[in-house]
Image (cartoon, rainbow, N blue to C red; front, side, top):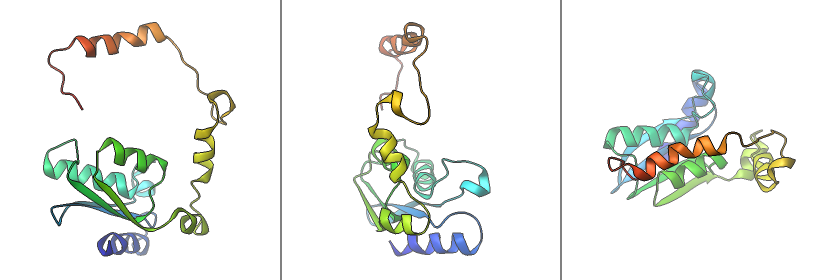
Length: 150
């Protein structure tokens, strides 16, 4: 946890991005780390947790982080929490909570509120198009004998 906090603080001091960083640990050793680089890379998905998961997966040569834990300087936002589940992390430990993030100007409450609404009530419209044609990719997946399940 101290390494994640150190990375987050250094990130701010270097004006490299927001005050967020994370490390991925397997068997007591750091196998990946990352700091927020949203503004440095013009990538809205470059949150510290996502950067750390990408680093760990690259270093380990895997797409699943089963057997690993994440230590992050702040409670993950909805995107990072979802990514943590997709990565199959065993656990997530965090320093600051979402209320502390809100006090610093990072408020994820809006996102959680939007997710609870029906699609038609959300601020950003979304609409299904070409469902029958889109199913073709799933049909190809189901039929494939070469796929790598994840």
